[in-house]
Length: 475
Image (cartoon, rainbow, N blue to C red; front, side, top):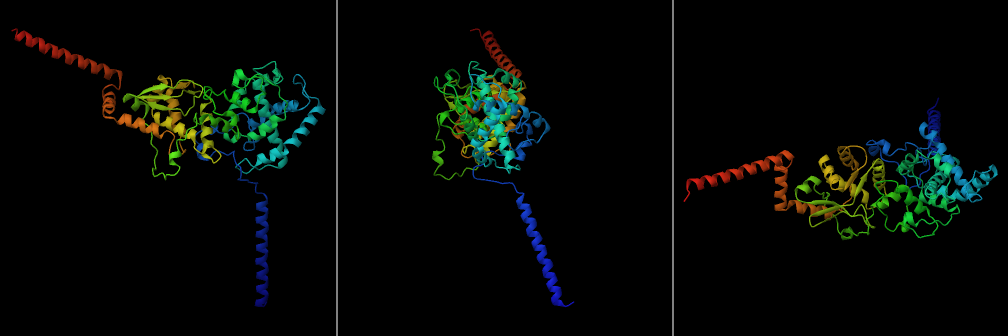
């Protein structure tokens, strides 16, 4: 065989290899899920955070959205709760009678057809809200999103109806259906990986005719005004003891991305504060955060810690220090606290979260105050922290110390001025001397008793010396 023929064969083999590589690459890319980075608002929690407490981020009772869809047998087993809510919601957008009744088969078909036709574009838009690739067909994704979103709206309506049994929103049998699992469902609805876009909930809610209901006594709205989805969400999320005493400033001007984003509004300062304007045109050279002293150090330096008065504009961020008094709004720590706060913090890590990361700053400030169990006990004694977890103060202090792990606090911090004022107070010569005295001689009850006993003995000795002198020199 001549050299030219060998070269031709070799060239043909090389071409076949190149063609096969091209075909393989095309096939590989065909199976790549669609990703749209334009409007991501729903994320998966980073692995490092999940390893701290996986259950706080992963749904335990019911899955919402694509990230955990049919991933576990226990979640699949609870799908009937969503389907029942979805079925009932179809009744609300069909022919509305004076009370919600079971639908005939033809009514179900009509309602589902109307729902799909009206919501198709909304669901397509919802696809782009998920930051991770979605490995689902379009048809499966649309069905899942409609079932999940309609269920959430229905679930909220049933909660509202439980307070208004005379209204069309109420269905006693269905409310009993969810009785006993309400908090399990609600807790899963606020997890970052278990979200649906709020605009989808709003559009589905708007499909349903609504009665004019007096909601002023419950949510402070206007009498005889039609109830809104914002109102419903606000009411339902008040079930979390952590936010129950607080209000959201300018609630009706907010545009939440999802339910978790709605909760993050509780950390916005009231009234709005322009604390970082002075840094807008200044390059920040400081590479570390100014942290406050611990609660124990503050108390030893004579700082009085008080719970802030409950008032209309009470906000988590309204922590103040003035005239030696540190005021902190009350913090209710109950069974849902860890799940709520961990997910809000996780959301603020991402671009769609609050850019100033107020929740991260707030929790970091508290973590600085609470270094040991003793610090926590002092805050409990002052009424700042209400421990309703059923656990010990030590467990709560350890929880606070773990919340900010792997979370970066922005610079500058909203609490820099407060931290600086506290440091200046504690570093004052007289306050520093008091702190040293308390730390060295009054750190335990026995030390206090010993100090007063020693003082008493010294006084007695002095008196004895005086009286001895008087006896020796009577004139």
